[in-house]
Length: 294
Image 1 (cartoon, rainbow, N blue to C red):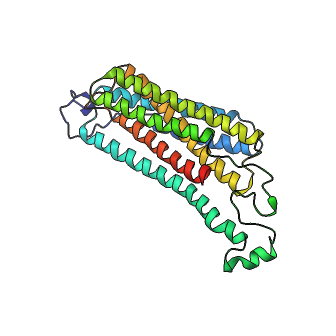
Image 2 (cartoon, one colour):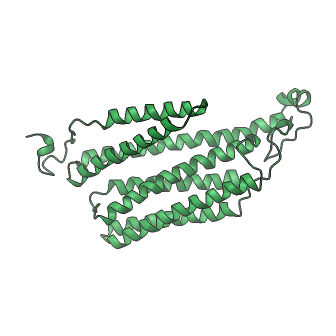
Image 3 (spheres, rainbow, N blue to C red):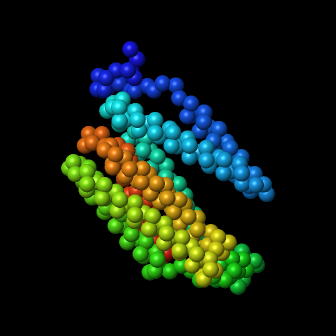
């Protein structure tokens, strides 16, 4: 009798070792096709391979996570494996913190060092300023020396960005309310809280798209607008990608909750999604302060 055939709970301190799976090799092939398709597109080729790679990635995610969900619902996972999942998610979020720390670090370096040096505000940069860019003033936002970024208007904080801040902060409240419902065994509250969080997440993305349209068409702020434009779109764009991923994950969690999944004792998937969502909330606060406001 294999471990997978044991009744649930017989070995609470043992790892569940799954049978052989084809999903890892499918994922490897999918990633290769995706990267090769992206390189082909960047070098003037068509987008067919890229679309095929994206399709394969989606199939892999749907199939592999579907297998994990079925195993979880059959109670094949022990408490020890649940702890491993939590540690894995914690380290993943830590890696994401470092990911955004690098981007915030680039913004800090540009504002605190590069731009002032080009403006001659350092003893070590007098020659650089005087010989190369004598007319450059160290102000922020900047379109760079020689106005290489063209003319643009900066994105102000007290418009759509402020509204989006309220939306994300509200979504943090609704996901916490949903968690309370799960802990208290109140499934209707769980579902309502998740539905509200998903709706707020997609509303945020819609307003972010409106903001980007306004930036390009009305403010003439583009990715090529000097160091300000590149850091603005780099930080907000990657955050928007993470919000998109988080909203999709929460949608799956919502459907699972409606299907009767998750109990007080076993709901790691919900907690992982909630951790991730709180993480994107905190990152947005940093963006609002350091990119839009200051």
